[in-house]
Structure formats: structure tokens, C-alpha cells
Image (cartoon, rainbow, N blue to C red; front, side, top):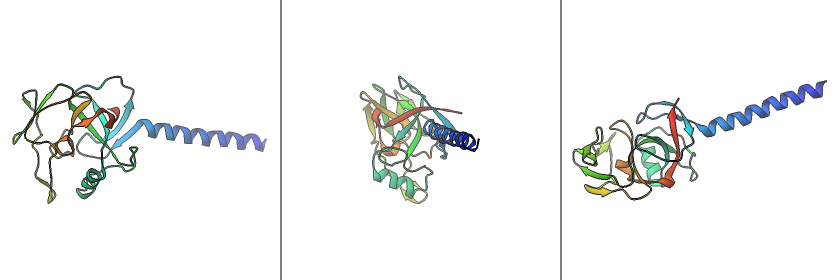
Amino acid sequence: MNLRKNYKFFLYCTSFIFIFIYINSIVYFNPSKSMKKGYYLKVFYTSLNIGDNVLICIKDEIQQKTMHDFGLPYIKNQCKQNFPYLLKRIFAKENDVIQVSKMGIWINGKLISNTLILNNYRNHKLYSLLHFGFYKLKKSEFLVLGITSHSYDSRYFGVIKKSQIYGKVILL
């Protein structure tokens, strides 16, 4: 009888561990103010569209250091390169024309609100990877932004490739 109780306890513990691991792989907590704070569910997708919320993986140590230096909230070691995910919204994709000006970012001739490129943040100098002028997005390229003017997004790390998108998410 004792063996049966131990076996049931083992099954409960094992099940709990597997459920915890599974939930952690499909549920993401956004600690940042650049998108609505909260829990997001990773969903299956076949296409990416303007307005979709996505988890992206930043490309390099310089970008991760920038996030750290500015005190931006993120969770480490989520992407393959042990860099953090960023939660952003797709604002432009293949064949969209982006114009960067002193007023902000224009997409297909429409000025997007809260896209003024900041020169500094918390007494740190910011450098934009988007240069003034026009740019037509190529296949598998996306412009991703946060919903606030103080978001660390494509204004600073540039256009992203589809390979940098970890998943599509919806707010729970």
C-alpha cells in the first residue's frame, strides 16, 4: 500500500513539473512599459500581419548591454543566444515604405504616433539604427515598435528579420 502512495505522489510531482515546463514555454510575462504589462500566450501562427504582437530575439551583446545600461526590464536567457525576448507589435512588413524624419516614423505616407526618435534616455545617449530617409522593407523584414514613445524598438535596433521572431502572442 505504501508503494502505491509513493507512486501516486511521484506521478503528481512529475505531472506538475511537466505542466510547469509546458506553461513556461507558451506563457510569457511582459515586465516592460513599452507594451501592456501582463501575461501573454504564445499561439500557433502561419502568417505574421501588421498589428500582431510578437516576441523577438535581439541580435547581439551590444543591444543587450544597451537594455541593461538603460535599466529596461527584461528576462534574461530566453532566446537561443541567451538574450532576452522583447515584446513588440508589427507596424510594417514586406513592401511597406518606411520614412524616418525628425517628426518620427512614417509608414506608407502615414505618420505613426509615439515614434519620435529620442536622443537620450535617463542621461544616456541613444543612437538610432534607422537613418533619415526612405526604406522599402524586403521579404521577411519587419518594423516592430512598442506602444509608447519610450520603447526600445526598431527605432534603435533597426529592422528585424523573420528569423528573429520567436513567436506570436496574445494578451491573457
